[in-house]
Image (cartoon, rainbow, N blue to C red; front, side, top):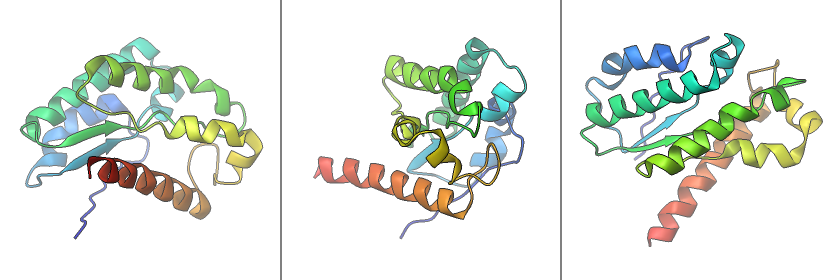
Length: 156
């Protein structure tokens, strides 16, 4: 009984998503919305303060589009390969901080789960410096599923 829609667009930044929200949410009423932005923003030299502003605005737009009925869960910006293993830490922290300050969204902190495995191990899950390979997609899917199941079980 689970239906999943992906609105992913290669090269997209959170600022792009802010203007696609009508298209992305027209005709669907999701229970859960996950957001994974930051890598392309950083690559395009978007300052962390503006990234945070745009993410906050995007969350507001999603809340309006879903009538406040969807659980909105931003994913902490994932580390990339090589030097990008550390380069995206400020964006990941911005997602955590914004989620905590808002209180109406919950951060799925996958970056915090990736960091302990180390840069070299994480790179075995990447097909390039940014994108997961098959094993990486499997790891991310399992981590996300575990996160959801933990919350469902906690609610009893």
